[in-house]
Length: 110
Image: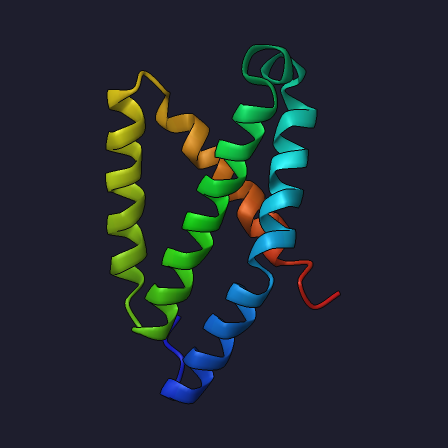
């Protein structure tokens, strides 16, 4: 989707950034709720990393929107998947994380 004006893109990017913390926390809560074994395995440190990762996703998404470049976010997602793969984390984990992002960003205006 291409937005017509840079002002529209900037407004949406700012809205995303202003919702970054609560959305990232909600994503993490959902993710750990769906994977209770992660709370045992990774603990609070894992929750903090998960929240930080969600913040990065939102920041890059906001930047891609502001730049009117969906390709930039796609490139970010590919690089992130490669980085996770190097750490033996399945790319499906990123897909699920981005699905949680979509779900929670859909509630920003509610």
